[in-house]
Image 1 (cartoon, rainbow, N blue to C red):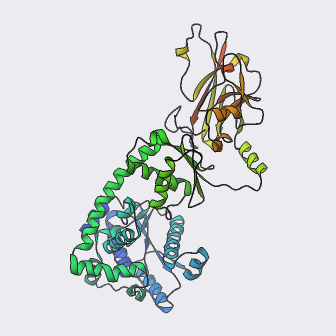
Image 2: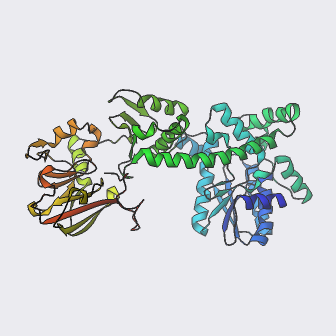
Image 3: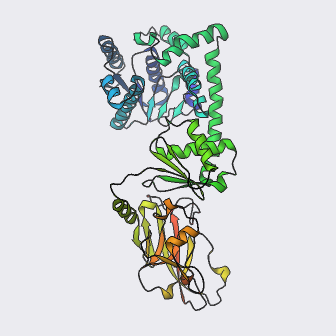
Length: 490
């Protein structure tokens, strides 16, 4: 018990006031977890609620398991929530294996009980043998650094207090307590992959290679966890530096080649994987192969494309790689209308507006031009600009491009169609329709993040200056990364 307590303290699993949801199947592992949580509840001071999921697969045997868990919880006066499902039907509808569907159903049950009771921890009964099986399974299928870590002791609200014990120790604990438990006969077969590892592989390793094989694997995985934490910090820093993330609605990222190439190969691959997980929303079917082809795409010519799982599409552009979710429209007009509606906001001068879809705040100020203004006094920041307010006659809008847009490119007043300017400046085609512009009618004052119109720049004759600042904005009213963030998505 002391080892369990130390393990829980090491990974900060339980604190006073927690509401813990425990999965109790009736098997040895979950009964051991249940009894240990009962002991710890008195010492630490948390609430305990049990959950039992009846999968509808084993007839009377499964019914007996349910009755056993009901009696156990009643004996110790612990609230119990029971879920009865038809797992075969669910797996067929979801096109999943029974194992995968079972995991999903149990997690859905835990989440449901968490919502009902205000639970903040979900305790699962995985132990060292489970972890060794997971490691072997991951190695056999092919895995990255995450897979080498096996099952984590803490993953969000999921905690696994028994990961410091092996199966034999669990059975010995129950024997000393004279506590009975249920035996699932299907676990004795070798139909499932995990059962093959459990009954055919691990016993050989323990009997013929090293009796402490399971313990040694778990000790190695603990070291991997520490390495993972360090690597995650490095990858997060690299991701922040070389990836431009668009708003959640648009769901695309831009990997900037110049900064991306400054990182070691391993970090680059992990940045790509993180980007694919962000855009795809899942990671189960993402493999080394997908990371490798993305790495290859970075070295190919502009215009080359790549299709990836979860309806993702990657395209090599001038800046690096743009990765996005494919979006479908019933017509070209529908696509154009959605893009136009995405951002068309009149500025408050003076004042500020929020572009919710872009997570941006635009602040406007009117300043009197200093008498001895020099070029050095004019802000050179990417997202803070000064404009000659004297010549602005109409309302200003932040919007996307429209037919007839033009921009003045030199002091002589020469105009260029915005479309031509995009081509000359190698702005990727897929970005042009969503690029934000500051406009007065069809005159473009500023292509945000790029250049200003020469016509609206502050001159000696200017009396009043319009200062415009653009910054990232959190929905809770705060700012991200400070004012004038150089990674603001526009």
